[in-house]
Amino acid sequence: MPNCPYCAHETQTESRVCKKCGRALIQRCVACAEDIPVLMQVCPLCKSPQNVPAPPPAMTPPPPPAALPNAPLGEDRNIIVVLLLSFVTCGIYNLVVRYQVGTELNVHARRPSGLKPGLDILLGILTCGFWFIYSDYRYAQELKNICEDEQTPVQDITVICLVLTLFRQGWITVLLLQNEANSHWKRHQGVS
Image (cartoon, rainbow, N blue to C red; front, side, top):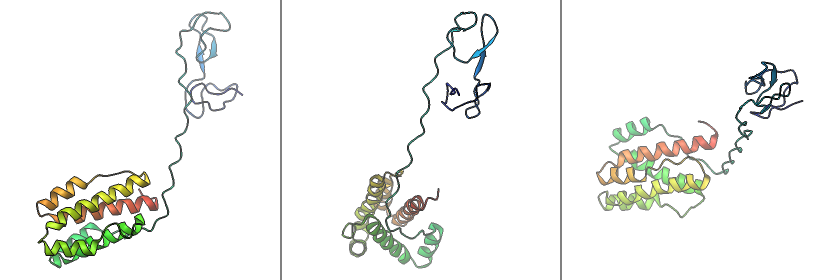
């Protein structure tokens, strides 16, 4: 049985079209108009040249995606609910989510001493929010590092988090961090 010159799929001898890629397997000779195998450089019947380009190399399937490590996942929180609860509690729930995201990133990365969300919140309150500029950047950087280590798609939000927190919009930063963490947890669960 011959193989298709385009996709290398095994075909029937009398087939005129490849069932896998749909390309023609038979062409007409430019001189004698007889059917000959596709991509023949010279007609086997009349010996006339055909001026047909060489076939492209056979396509190889992409390698299977690497399995993501079996690491503990964080909670998938709806950012609209986080926004509403933060508004209703005058920002207290925002601090709770900030703590939870930091803890979940530590557990997921298996670095229990990496981020220190409790200390970061305390220092953020004591410095009237200035410490959050640094800590929000660090949390976004940690999430980026986790994605790079696991070779998953990276959405770098470090600069956005830095700028938002610098302009006293840390509540948006927490929503962005939670949204990116949600996306990362879904990739681990195989959900697109």
